[in-house]
Image 1: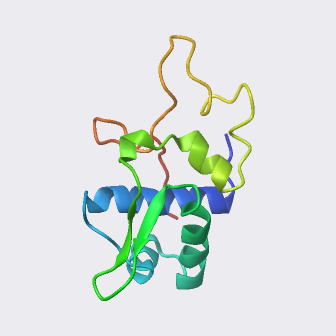
Image 2 (image 1 turned 90 degrees about the vertical axis):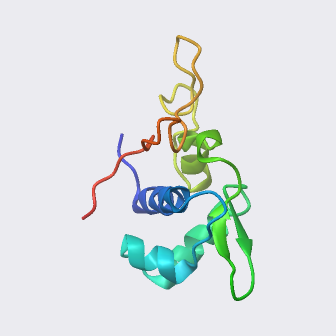
Length: 121
């Protein structure tokens, strides 16, 4: 499966937030530096992800972004659909449960490994 740049970078931002740990927030500049993305682009991605209830924001001196729910409760297919992907279409391997009845692939598997792998450029 081929991901668009927006899908890949959106997933990378969510994975970065998941790795920050529960209760830890990251600012847009921190995410941008960690992922080598521009601040305006990270801000755009967060604006897309917030209505989907993937991230939540806190204003103020100690504010930033955190995951809105546990990483293991965020299916990759939902994230890709919010970012404009086609993975939510019927028959997609990411959005459809496997034939054995398992749930869709989570963003971060319970083992702590990422459900979506990527390579840094």
